[in-house]
Amino acid sequence: MGFGDLKGRGSKKNSDALAESFIAGAEARANPQPTAVGRARVKNRQSYLFSLSTDVSEQVDQLSLLHRQRRVSRSDVIRVAVQALAELPEDQVLALIDRHLGS
Image (cartoon, rainbow, N blue to C red; front, side):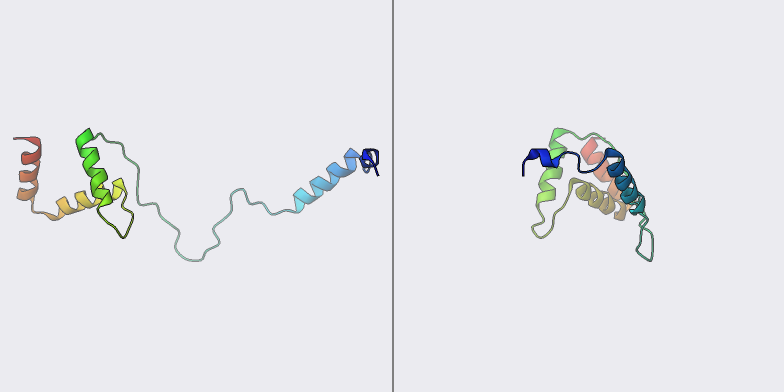
């Protein structure tokens, strides 16, 4: 058997019709609908852009490496810091701001 035997096994029209038939019978999965029963997942985070000095950025990196049992992202460090500040009394937050930004 040579390469000549591979030619002309079917017409292009026939193979196109077979391909179309196969495609038509397939399930559409381009945008699958969620199949899980229950609550829909709600996105509760949004991306923001803000500037940090090089020193503060390095401190955020160092803080993210402190925890040895879990991965802590830079966003996690910022989130925890903001939550910790929000739990402080207002006068302590103002004192911290004045101390770090200058009065």
